[in-house]
Length: 260
Image (tube, rainbow, N blue to C red; front, side, top):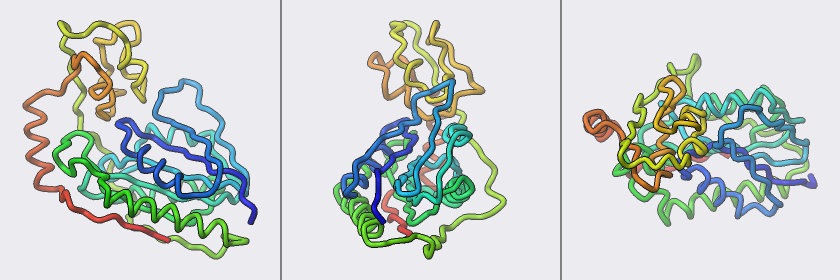
């Protein structure tokens, strides 16, 4: 099949999922177009793809599920039997139902999944877990996944025969969140508004960035990473408890799972 373009559709608050997606795309011989759904948009963009596009979907796993913020954009998502590959990044615990949920969501909207992968990465909250991942060795495996996808789309005339099976359970596990809404050091905050502009859910008040809507916050940590004044932080007590819990549940040397 003569392919049109590689479409990159991803959600990446801390930049890790984007890094993985870009490494994969660098090994696929198609012109790429990015749809970064991390930046909050009140009006959801139209995401309509042709039958000869290849769409690469990328998400970080939140408590074993696809981030609900990412799925909100699926209201305007549609394919035409469009081949798709799925990528989940997770902080060295488990990705549980995330790949299965993502597969079901995209296939119900006109896509044909031809490959999937789950890559363990540095934990977005407790960064000592999986510190520095994806590392050089990880990136080699990520690049190889891209090369295998490239060979598949370049050699096949039809994708109807593919039946990619990924792990997961239905009904899905109950969606949860770390509930680590950042606090603000009002003496350090300069009201620059960079946190509000970057928040994926619009949880931070643009007029008064010292205010955060706890109901909208998904504890993604993007505002902490982007604040040059280091004015945003997470409760030390909560972080200590979460770190102890995750150190027991996570395994920093986990291997990637590839489904082709």
